[in-house]
Image (cartoon, rainbow, N blue to C red; front, top):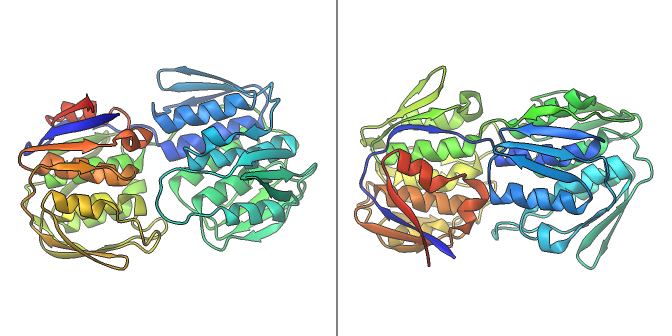
Length: 417
């Protein structure tokens, strides 16, 4: 098992290329199963979760080839309907093949998903939406068994605008007979990216960027060449790191439209934000102001940026309150940040950060993907050496993280524990 060793205290300087979004890549990979032939996905990040998804769809009979950041997925010979436990347990998003298999084949057997071990994140909305399309669903020894010789259009209201449920139901609905209206859907950029690609494949979906999607079913879809949008959470992570280390960093390829709330809060905290033709420039003198945030569904402040924002606020003057109403128990990073010297108190789903803190290196442990990122940010700003263990979480969502930070001047290296 690997760990990161970081000697902090160096302001980050330079430019960093923002990778394609993992959370946009995985739905596109599932969508490729809907069409016979070769779908080409460009700007796909080199991440463990993407590798896992590739293994899942290969198990279903598709051929997956990777050339640098381009993936070729040929789903012509799909001949299996089971996504097994040993793969699906490692990554929740692999459950997207459920909707795709039903749309393409009319049946599926998919293990209940796994992923980061925090919070109850059931897939009941996924299953309700797919049942509304006419699928019969049973649970059999930890597997979702779905059967629908012919899906039929319906009107379905999501109890919560879940990104995963929106994607899964959409993948099933594009080939359903008649019209499907999905209300209260997620509006995240990753959903919009999927809608655009599906329409390019021949689907008929209206309502892009809105909370209502209207889908007219089609008989078949065609393989296409498409591209993954930049990772807004990776961009936000480097923004927070530059802010806390008093850095000056250009986020190449970052999309400001996807980061409206984060950029607004960063500016409020005293970080200079400049949108350029190349991306977003982040400049900080280290004199940060405390800013409260409350997570919300998009376009609000993303829960995936909550941990990084808490870390940023450890360097701010005053008291900031960070409230997570999306995942109220997503605060496992707080005790680890306190080991580094952060002054944080918790009450229910609210973190109270007292700043500025004098962060000092220590041995800490990653608990999930975004918690891991928050520890890296803190370690980059801390005096002395920090050892971060269990960094396999980072490899799920950040491409070449230590290399990219090294390019910005950070003293960071990976070692085997």
